[in-house]
Length: 356
Image (cartoon, rainbow, N blue to C red; front, side, top):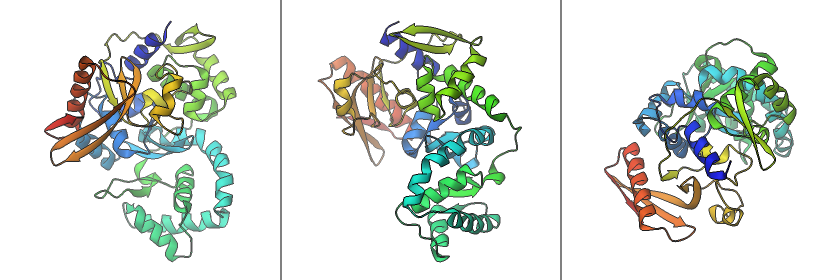
């Protein structure tokens, strides 16, 4: 195996190549979870994996609760399917809370603050279907709970992990919260082993070929969890060894060929869901993709590799895409990128795209 084969298989399994989904909820369920702290970018991540997906369609799915956005891994926001919310949080919450403990102490968020916040917010949300974030923050502050310096974010994350609250629909550009039990269906308890196996099956089906280390990074679980889980799945997955690492993947054969160029959003699963990202970017280019040494900017993908970054501006009914390639693009590559930009403009409901 060589890097380009891994890239092609991943694009096929993630349905960047041959997008066939018609429903945003089906994309989310197939992928397991989709990183979404950048809400706008995450909608495009779903749209690229859909047949005729639009921003409007995904926004409607979010408003209706067909997909939810919550802290479920690492920890950061992810889109997940409501049917998966209970068992996923049962699996991941304690580990995330342990990771957050030190920061909560710095912010002086103790059990008294958390219990009082839960009581206040639960009472408020019992009488309202959903309430905007700013209103909930103001409610806590009015009742003597400091919500400055990330305190509100950490309080709300704790209540998400405790399955007290979850995302509501947006009101204009405002995010809201709702009671977890009002938006999430009841489901059967899986137990830890069953949940690990189910999450691993989703991951290696949709993200493979990938290693156990990749899964551990993506899920936030332990290598012990991963090793135990793969023992139950060895008969369901194929594997090969490449440069000393074992890669696992589903034995289904997807033949759709990737497009020559993509304009991926930041935090796209094609990049962020793997611990080892060398398949997509050379070490010398990592700092170009992001000065922090990560690669979480909007990225230009050509033949499976990151070849630069991009930014968007919307002016009336026109999408403007500003490119910062790592090296001069060929005319062929530039035309391929223009095609990708037009696709993004169509997703947003805009008339055309301009690339510069």
